[in-house]
Length: 496
Image 1 (cartoon, helix red, strand yellow):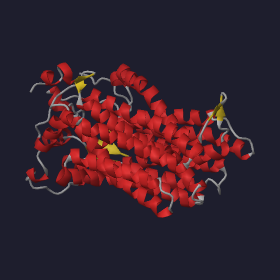
Image 2 (cartoon, one colour):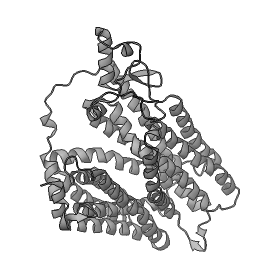
Image 3 (tube, one colour):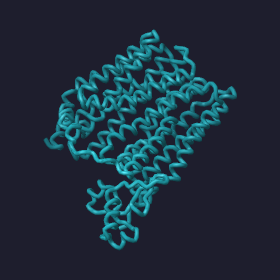
Image 4 (spheres, one colour):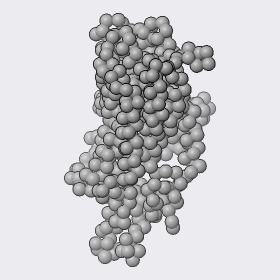
């Protein structure tokens, strides 16, 4: 069936397969439940359960970090046993059970509920995205736009969840907030099952993919250059972990800060500490179109991937610089305006919108081809490590002066930004990529050039150290001819 046939008549949903609407609302309700509960989780532990700040921060960090870690295993389980459709269904059921378990009062149910949500999210999260991609046939140009719509559902759920579930939890009853999150996930499951027919073709495409057993070519040993490229991925992994460690404090340190030090009223409206988690999602919805327009407008002049990495760390560091005087004022006995936090989240979101689109792109460019999937999975662990560190930092809010606590986070992220800017992944005259002080060949073109020089078949221009064939292999397939890479900090159009 052709793409035009698939999207004709009643099969359309804003020009996309109808299955996209099913997955849009499934993910929206799943994120509603996850962020709705996450918004008040640390408050529940410190207020209702009587946990100390370090204990609550540790539990929070272990929980949110495990959610990201479980996603790796969820993909494996789907590929080998359950399949993507059933993995999403089973995962959603387990998530709903987890939230309803949290609604029960005894402490053992608290830990059991968190564990169920970790397992369920690990099954659902990676596989619902896989089904979205499979809605479109090979080469369908609507795929990227489809994911943009899908991600809007994610942020819509993240916006609404803390507002509704958070208010119920803080104003009425903590356990009612947990139950509200469970109802949200149940609504997502109901429409997911009702829309199963719309997903049938995507599920069939996924089932038709060759499995791991289809790869029979023997793996050769890694070369020293491969190891250096993988080392570069590790460097970016560490920097991404630092970014998420600061960014994800929204649900831990900054939620406690909002509850204890912020004047929770604005324009006569009563606010709740859990609501501030929604501010990040709101800024994503507002700023994403602007960033998309900006990157298109800049075109080849937009910052490179390493530059965007540095900008992300810079912005999140500046957000905590802004919070340093706010912390000093708050510890002086004056509750600060909520606009301090709103301003900090705005700056953080500028960084998040720089990092998110390029993090995985950097890995795919640097990783040796035969371990790209493995290193992508490892890179996802930066979210897990970052969330763990974010929870750990919350344990210091009652024992460390706030300007110092925020200042340490600012210093670490700004230092990482300076280091990234000072040592970008850059091209040297031998066709290698350098990360810091090491040479990392990133293209087959560069290696081929070295071979031509060794055989004496290189052109005079190439022998003078001015190679013309230094673009990634996939780019050469698209253009049919080699091109010279521009400066790594600017994507200016290459010269002819």
